[in-house]
Image 1 (tube, helix red, strand yellow):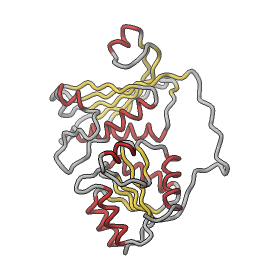
Image 2 (cartoon, helix red, strand yellow):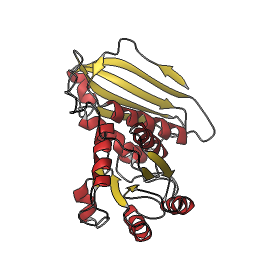
Image 3 (cartoon, helix red, strand yellow):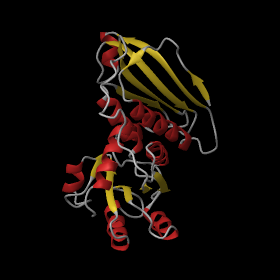
Image 4 (cartoon, helix red, strand yellow):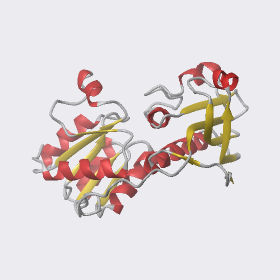
Length: 278
């Protein structure tokens, strides 16, 4: 792995926690593209797009940008795969190996931050993902702190169920930093096993809505039937309206849309724990 940081890459406006999710997902994607090993490069740079260049870079305007790039020497992609790589639930992995939300999440975070993601790849030639974020002339002012200066925290036990390893790791770190005890599971079956091992001593089930081997709604129904007073919080790369229309979860559920910041996670978890049992 090679890190190439441009000390003159300048400033951009983006949530640090969400940017960390972008980096983790892009690096995880590069890792999966190199099952036999290879070279991973992560770096930053700054570029200036004029009118002609911005036309070549779809959905960008002329101006100065800070770029983050992740390249690999992996299997590469066909034009057909490349065209769909940012679609939610699209994946080239075998069934049960992932939901295909990682790159869609990256795309959503970057677009939300006013930027764009480009991908260059050919079969057998590896891939290069480039994140373009508008340059800021100066650092943003620090927002006013909450009344006590800290996001909500706690000490309860949370069962975190998320099949995407990078998202699960980052979310677990956020929760741990807020004082919670976190038990991690990659799917519904593992979550049930974890609950049995600790005798159901769980205060909150934090589960992705869509996972290989069973959805979050089915898992929540099974666990709330066995653990009286269990609180449930769902999360998803889709909005609450979409998952409700698709019948993936029931109405009146606690829901946290991805991507989320550490503060948004802390608030949603605290509200779910302090609210009525499911």
